[in-house]
Image (cartoon, rainbow, N blue to C red; front, side):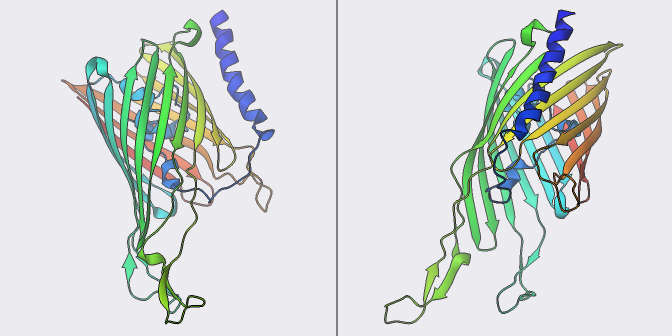
Length: 349
């Protein structure tokens, strides 16, 4: 009975944090941050759970959600490929590999790339295009380290190297993610807590030959000269996340995992996320989740302008001799845009 009380209390704390977010709402600076691609989630399993599982995420998908969970894998080596059809027909590809080295911990490498397609070049003289085109390149390379400090505590960190190139203009930067997971909180089997801080790093600034403009310097007796336009530096979209998860055994090799998370953002209103996963004999998985942001102001018709909400997904797991295969799918609803479809294939060796 006492265990149930602590479980209910823990989840109530998340709801209270979400409810009081309106009191401490920050100024909305959406669209002013750098490297927004860092915020695009990857991995169908936890997208299907609404992205709420930072306290329970494990294995190679933890590289994005909470690097502390990378070390919590039943295999010594893992590989993963994920594809998502994102907003405005942007394709998001993610590839990752990891390997465990005993007491040293687990190392991971990841690559996220965005495919925006070909974009026509426009100028002042040719606003409809001059016949040329370019393909923007947005890539994030991550290096992750995770290890167990005890049978209950796991820690991890990821260093992301960011590169953005749009025609003849580009920017680069570095962002750090760090996280911790504590299992069996209050000696309650299956109750986990997780904390992450993401996208910590210096501001980014665009530069390149595309910012050169011919101009006539004042008080100089000569013709026009190419001058460099100096762009503003923009901060990274830093987030602080606190999550709880509880795994409830249902018998017959079936269990239900409940997860919740509160996300504090430095660039827009704060967010609450909730999710669940039904594990049927560790073979078939059914998932659902929901994201909400009560602080986000209403649009012109009086509806909350936050575009994300319902998610759901499913997955299959099979173990061959020494090889584990996971295939997962997720659906992420979005207002004003087509829903995102995510497919992920993972291998464990």
